Image (cartoon, rainbow, N blue to C red; front, side, top):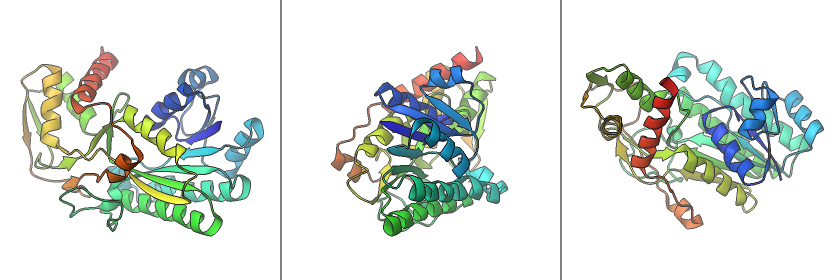
Amino acid sequence: MIVWITGANGFIGRHLVHELAGGGQTVHGVGHGALDAREARRLGLQSWINGEIDAANLNALAAADGPPARIFHLAGGSSVGVSIERPFEDFSRTVASTARLLEWVRGSAPNCAVIAASSAAVYGADHLGPIAESAIPTPMSPYGQHKFMMEQLCRSSAQSFGIHCTVVRLFSVYGSSLRKQLLWDICSRLEAKEQLLTLGGTGNEIRDWTDVRDVARLLASVAELSSQETFRIINGGSGRGTSVADIAAGLIRQWGVNTVVRHSGVSRPGDPVSLLADDAVLRQIGFDWRIPLDRGLADYVAWFKGQVS
């Protein structure tokens, strides 16, 4: 089976390439980042186009290797902070790229299933417990708003043109090769031997943390169901919430130091108090999360130390 991944050179994309190629699928990628042929093959990509998600590049992939049976759409904005600083850039990366992709699928590969990675940021604030897919989206940031607009484009393509689209709302994905966000920040400061870590917020913020290796399996599993419904939204979370304070404590424990953590009490713009998945749909389809948080944090610390040694 020929599959394409947009954003295949990104954090989740690289892990998904490994998962799909390891399962015997022929994987091609398009997105940003220079990869020579040797590095692309090492990742598991049969071919890679460094460029925009547009008709020219998608046509080039199809002409060289044939049309895809599935497209995993991972390209897009990946930071709430960047979306606030440069909202049009985030719009272009997430919304415009999705519109171009779906238009190409409509005209050139209408039988191709699209699996799009969205974000729990579409839910916004005021959710104090597990959030079901039926909750009304109230995004707090341009990032969340643009992800929701991407979802609406997928819904429209499914309703108007019969394109099979599955949207997976990912929660707090972490793991090796993640070089930003909370885990990277804490480990960088532990590596610098800071004795006191001051973090934003209260420390009581709840997130649904999922290891990227499990997330790659999830996306691959969801793709197997993509022909069952024309449009579907699925929460990509475990249903288990962990506070930011507990994540910091877990990283410090895995690092093997006695660093003190305090919290400023000041939350970042666009940062909800709680984002926790209602995982009923995943339980219904039989997906199992295999990597417990303690192991995931231990693996991340080991990976981080290997990068800086």
